[in-house]
Length: 245
Image (cartoon, rainbow, N blue to C red; front, side, top):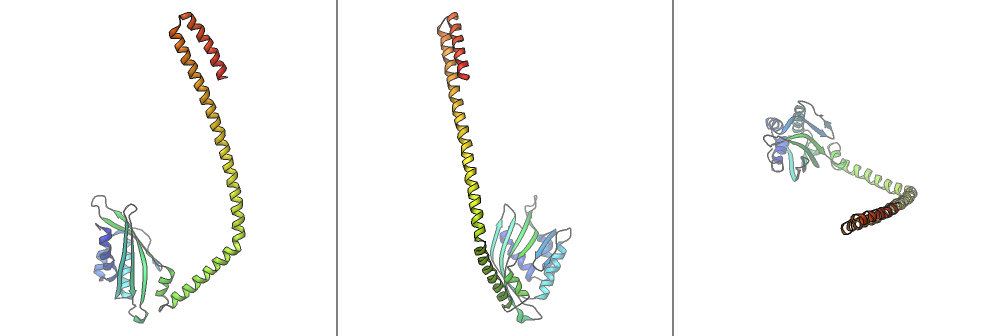
């Protein structure tokens, strides 16, 4: 693919709605030889020649449902991580039981690799992401499976609420303990910082005094004769010893 965002719709249509030869051409053109495929009901893994399994999965899918309605309504490409996301809706109609036709929503995650010479993108892995209430429609049609999943999910939500109520004392106690430790640590850090700041200020003050004495000695050496300068230097050296100690 030269432009993944614009090219991927035609690739998906060829894979899902195309003839066996069109499916094979799409797999060989846009997938790497070691591409992997992951679905709630099947998985290929990644190894040399694994895209052959992907081709057979798509061909079997087309056999199960010769006519698949497809609508792509969102495509997003992360050029930095080379990941392409596609959101779509499909109507799967089993040819042996067309009354079991189901509309299913899913997101497809495609990991790409870019050829360093041609700049084209190739698919290294495909992951079909279905929520539970969507893939259950393949097994239990007419919305019955979805209703069961929703019921179980609502029960799980009620369980979460009850668990939060029962576990509230534990979280409150943990928060108090961690909060107390945090305050002690903050006090300790502030104390260390204050001590370091005071020490630094004292050292800087002494350095300033020494620099002043050195400057005074330099001026004295320039203005006085050698003898007086030597005496002044000795005197200032004694002052410096007093300051530094």
